[in-house]
Amino acid sequence: MATIRTTPEELAHALQRVALGDRQAFKTLYGATADKLYSVSLHILRRADWAEEALQDTFIKVWHGAGDYSSNRGSVMSWLISMIRYRSIDMLRNKNNQSVNVDDLPELQTHTELDQAVANSEYAQQLENCLQELQPDSRQSIQLAFLYGLSHKEVSDHLSTALGTVKSWIRRGLDSLKRCLSK
Amino acid sequence: MNYQITELQHALAARFVIGSMRGSARQRFIRLQMQFPRLRDEVIFWEQHLNELTQQIPTQPAPQSAWANIQQRLGWDSAPSRSSGKTPWWAWLSSITAAVLLVVLVQQTLLTEPTPSTDRIAVIQNESARTLWLIEQRDQQLYVSATANVDPLTNEDYQLWMLPANGEAPISLGLLPQQGQRTLTVPADLDLSQVAALAVSREPLGGSPEAIPTGPVVFTTDLLSAQKT
Image (cartoon, rainbow over all chains, first blue to last red; front, side):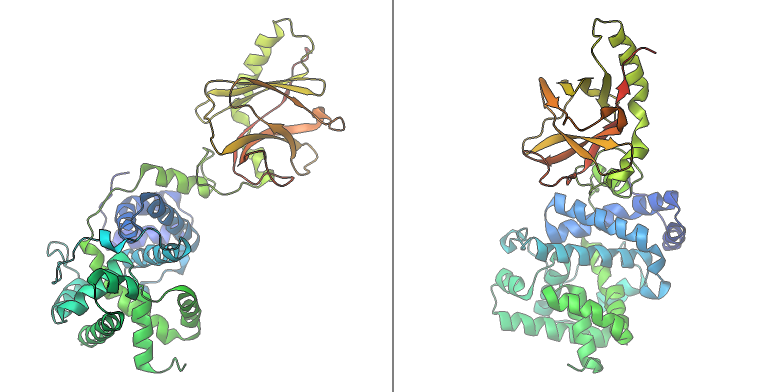
């Protein structure tokens, strides 16, 4: 199913229809978001079959729980991304973390690479600016944890840095981000 | 731990969202969000901002099978699915009609052949209406012939079940051959005239470890009388 381009408002409308049991709206929502969500999961799980399982689980949950969404929980896309990220992280634990070999991860750039063509939302712009203010080590550690689902220990292994140091980088980075994002 | 402390709320929510909080701590934090709305607000704050990081991830197409499997799991599509959950036995009755017409045609064909002792017949088809097994019942014997259309299983068996017309739990009739022929003996106390339908499930090698199906039901069909009226 090719990705259907939709606006955030159209996604919100589709989700409202899904909450009323509209199967066509569910198909529209799936078509508009599945590729993105699958890619997010695949980044964490690094196995296509597990990522598909996470995608299925997420949409089953969406069908049964669309009414739980409210606009104060962020955009529909952000809500969906959180759902599949958390499902993928849970699967990592349940499957004994077998998929992650930190040696296989590509080297992340030491600076943020948000695509300027798509980093056009208010949150994206603000995040971009605040990430630039972080120390490179903190920024990279946070990205590794968030995008690849790595634990502190795995980040430590990947960067060949002491665990305590990595914990400190992440904690200080998040504190700085919080202050910057709250301005 | 005092979850009302603002700094602690920040730290826990951030760790939860980036994923570095793991295991039982993660499950406990999900429960705490229900108890402390401020924690939930913190989580939403981080989600709204950090989820923008996913824009760095190149988009790859989701597998074609995913949508079909979702529909299958929601019970919208009767096609078999490799990852579907168990189907309640009482739900089988709703998906039986597809093979009936072919059964009638085969029945008419069989009746022109010298097979006077056949009591009932059944044709089990896949979702593409291709015949997988032909079953003939004579007295308490089921003569089962597998066709080349049967998708062979390596670590599982296909198990045949009868669904009693009185609505009771399904009863095993034995394992189906994946090729060639096999004769299954129906227990003497089973009256096959009281069968509402037949069903096939995928089970561990040797069959279901329980008295009822434990694997997904993948095919259903009718057992029709082959006697001339």
